[in-house]
Length: 123
Image 1 (cartoon, rainbow, N blue to C red):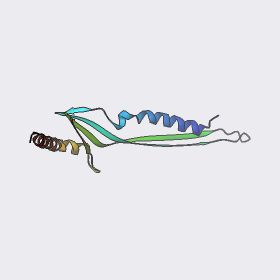
Image 2 (cartoon, rainbow, N blue to C red; image 1 turned 120 degrees about the vertical axis):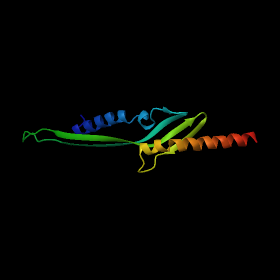
Image 3 (cartoon, rainbow, N blue to C red; image 1 turned 30 degrees about the vertical axis):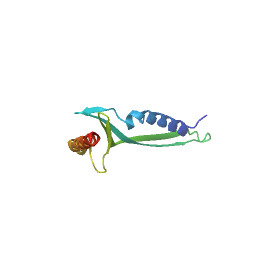
Image 4 (cartoon, rainbow, N blue to C red; image 1 turned 90 degrees about the horizontal axis):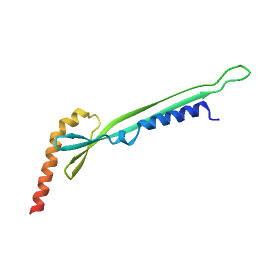
């Protein structure tokens, strides 16, 4: 029979595993103007558990406890416009607001690059 600590760890891993699924790392796409944006996140999991066993002669029983946590941190976005795909990392210390503040500049760079590419192809 598995010990209480083993059962706790197994249960914690199972529960946290359901939270750390692929959809958490690569988020649901959304539209921003002509762009389709897909958020990419880093998922960190941590667990801990402990248990004990009592003495029959002292009439004591088992005890145990455990806990776990999950952290989901946005790290980047994949931007898609037509057939163009680009990856935009969110820098350390940056925020989601900073990304959205930069979105017009990112869009302009992508459009400029695409225009240059089309001009080169036509030459």
